[in-house]
Length: 274
Image (cartoon, rainbow, N blue to C red; front, side, top):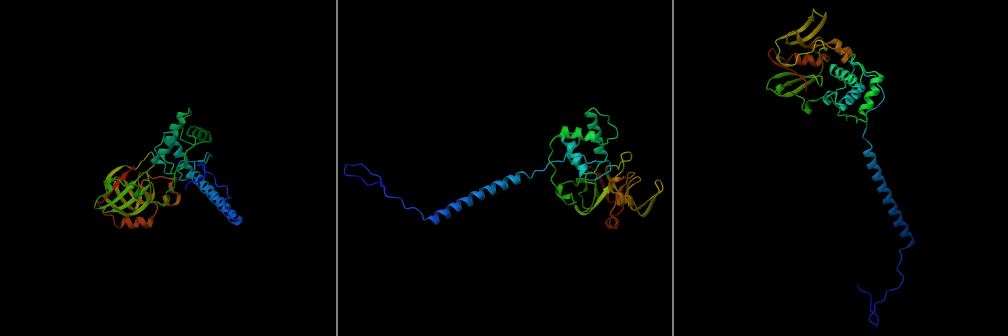
C-alpha cells in the first residue's frame, strides 16, 4: 500500500517508531539462529568426516613372504596391481607363484636381480615410491564368492559338480546349478601345478595312501591321472604355507565327507582361474 499523499501531491514517510520485539523474544530468536548455525557446522563437519573415511594402504614394511595369507600380502598385491604388474583379481591375500612372478618382474623393472621374488625392505621402498598413494580395498566380508560371478559357466549344469576356482582358492560343491557347500582349497606347487580343465571323477577311495609321497589321502576323488580332491592334514595344520603335488587339498574334513558321500563316479569336475 502506498504512503499517504500531502496537500501538495508529494508523499511523506511515516516516521512513527517501529514496534520492537520484547527483549526476551529477541534473545530467543538470536539463540535459535545460533543453534541453526551450529547445526550447519555440524552437518558440514559430518560431510567432511564422511569424505575423510577414504583409507590408503600403509607404507610400513610388513615382511610379506611366499606362502603367507594375510593383509601384508594383500597390501603388496594391490601395490603391484597399481604399477601394472599384477591383475587386481589376483589380490587374494595369498602369496603364491603369481604374486612371486610379479615381484620378480618389479625387481627387474627397477634394475634389481629378479632373484626368487623376495620382498626386502629395499624392494618395498622402491615399490611404495613407484606406486605412491594407493586406496585400500573395501572389505566385503564373508567367504562365499559365488554371488560375485566367479562360478565358471561349465559348472552350471543340472547335475553334481565340483567347481574348483584357483583364484578364490575355493571348491564349490554344486547341484543343479546351485552352490551347496563351499570349501577352502589348496593346489599344486609351481613345479607340479594342478591341471586346469573339465574332467570327470573316475575313481573314489575313502582311505587312500600316496606311495610316491608317503602320505595319507583320505576321501580321495580322482579326476585327472593321479590328481584328486582329498583331505589334507598338512593343509589343516599349516594352511597356505604349503602346497600339494598337483592334487586339490581340502582342510575341512567334515564338509568334504559330506561332498564325498554325494559325488558319484562320472560327475563333473571343473578347475579354472576366475
